[in-house]
Length: 462
Image 1 (spheres, rainbow, N blue to C red):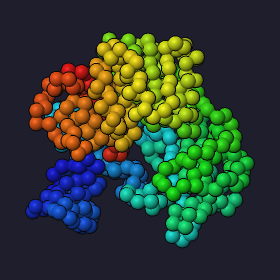
Image 2 (image 1 turned 180 degrees about the vertical axis):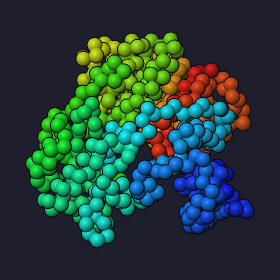
Image 3 (image 1 turned 30 degrees about the horizontal axis):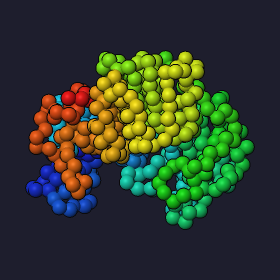
Image 4 (image 1 turned 180 degrees about the horizontal axis):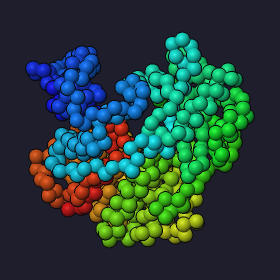
């Protein structure tokens, strides 16, 4: 019987002293499974048959669910998904940071499907040598072909259809990672208030028949731009450094939370607009209630949150590495009447933030950090702790690295001389003097149907 669910949404079953992880199962289900791999009393299994389905089980919408690696929990009722994500955050804080806290129910998304404003899909060659457009299978670069995806709106289906026709009609080959031959590697599309930023990522310097592709896209999309990005590298990164505008406007504007902003092909914005709104409003409320007179937004992307903080608090500084995103943030200043209130710095957070922290009044400054999945640089965390800044909001889509970073700031984790992090036996829930205490934890369901969860943790200097 499945006893509980793990952080990746897989069912947990104990057989003797061995723990098995069986994906796509639910708590309380009796299952027949096959053990795929067992090592050190930990086994990975494949469910062959659900003998007694749980009440939480529903029929998945996607025909390639369990094959495609995009969704892991589409077989669970939505409320069960929300509970699982809260448990994931709570378990990470307890196991990694030694912080015991009751995590409230994950704030739901307005849309459980068709919520993504961004499509990022690989293109390749199948075993028979034919082009394939789809999503990677779990833990692999094997592409599972798709014609549509239920967590994306209908425009994703139109995009896949257009590129399939383009490649077939004009002999454009998908990229083969083994032979490193072929042309098209990825298709990336961002929807911005009914406008579409389409980027064709190529391994070659040119995109063949770009005019033909533009014409085909024009039959499906009224307002769009077509970019080419050149990525001839061997790594897993989607984009290379070179972007070329082939058709349409370079950037498109939108309005969110009273802020007008611009988005380009490489500008980061949250992929779920409704949940982004709820998250950012919660951050701004924490910042204003802290009594801060200035705010710092680290990993600020296109500057939407920075602008919101500047508008409500009076002065805000954004720090962003990607130049295009930083330029989009600069473009927010004039139309939102934030001159003299919003300031953007383009550079690495680990370089810019320590310098900026030395220039502000720590007692009157609010800091928010929203790093990539790898979390905050260790040196940056030390700079935050040393600054004395009073209120910090930490946002992350990775509960494990978030728990580690929060553990460092609260003092529940300490660093040994060898650089290893260990749990601090002196730590108490009220916090350690000179460190931060945890004010609140709130997960947000930015990614329904998947194992991923966005979490906001608010900290206050003790």
